[in-house]
Image 1 (cartoon, rainbow, N blue to C red):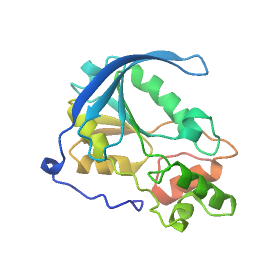
Image 2 (cartoon, rainbow, N blue to C red):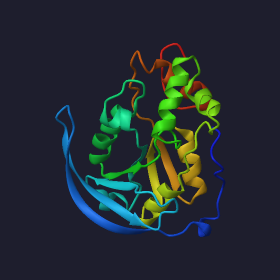
Image 3 (cartoon, rainbow, N blue to C red):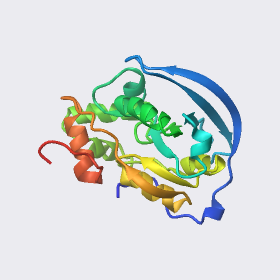
Length: 220
């Protein structure tokens, strides 16, 4: 289990209830031409006060009645917007939208840049990685946790939408553990694809060996 910023198993009754604030339809189109439509939802009552989003894809309202496919995706400006090759975030986002839209489900876009340490700190960590540290060592050298993400808000969003039982699209075992601890049953864990590049090989290998991400990489 990665070092986090103090998350713990919670009594589900202690988690404040969130409510849906706004629902709006947004047509999506990716650079490779793939297009779909999302129902974007905002929330009141999220415990960290940040502007997290849920994207309902496909027939998501029917899907939440059983066990919808869900991807909690942490915001990554460099990967999601600028196409950075240092991580696999952009390709994972693109993959998740298409895979979720087919059966219907939810993509949670969580404002957790840099595993929760923020954009500037993430770029500071990149500089330390260029000096030889790995992705987790760099965070620690900055005086931060290896992974400071807390998924309580993800649980709040899912429970507000009636998705108390999900199929989780993620390679990260910590996401499953935290959601289970917050009252969301993870019926199945489904790994994402491996989006490997010359620039992110060490990054992905470190996630696989250090925090048990389900990544089938050559040589591991």
